[in-house]
Image (tube, helix red, strand yellow):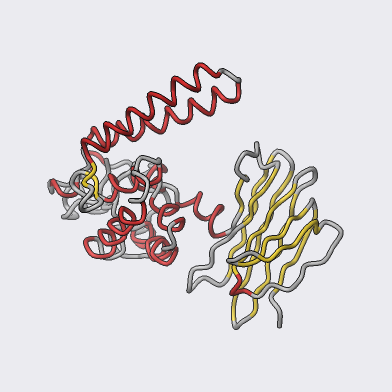
Length: 301
């Protein structure tokens, strides 16, 4: 649904190579829901349900890959970005093939779509975070800042004040073209908060009791400011990176804690303050444990 068509006059693409099979979409969603049900059963302590959902999910994954995955080319079905990104991010890709599937996603997006939006409404829920997780924040940033069709910037330049139902809402038949379809934002806002600002609920944490703060820094972006009102209070993140200097102001609400991760390339100075619980060097950078409070992290001069 809402795949950018090959012609801006069309509502839906007529090109089979752009269309993702319904069986791909339904099966990936089904598998994802089974994994969620395992988590819910774990919260209630229902071991029988955990085992049942786990067994069914394993069968679904095996059957799905037998039917749709090409092990020689490491692509799913007709190699749409949606088919590949859903399979990758929802955990259906066989072990050892993840990077190859990701490379197909990148190649398709860069070559066939010239670094623009390459999915419909379901794939766009995972595209930005998927690219970033596998090391291509530069491509995610390009997609986010594009101003030519198809892109969010294109809508803005055409006077849109809400998100269209169609990427080509200014040229397609208005018979099916809502002017307020927030679902087409996909994971863009999540990407802003979690990846650019670095505000994440830590794995296993509930309602931001423990934070994982690990921003990414795409070339061309020098300033990010974000805040999130959690049940414990307001979380704040504001970083600046320009002319060789770096600063990051963080607010951690009361009764919470955070693990902050930054790359080695930033050369962060040793943080100080009563709330700084632990600082350790890692292979990739620095990891800092913080209690509640207000902090400023800067690079060494």
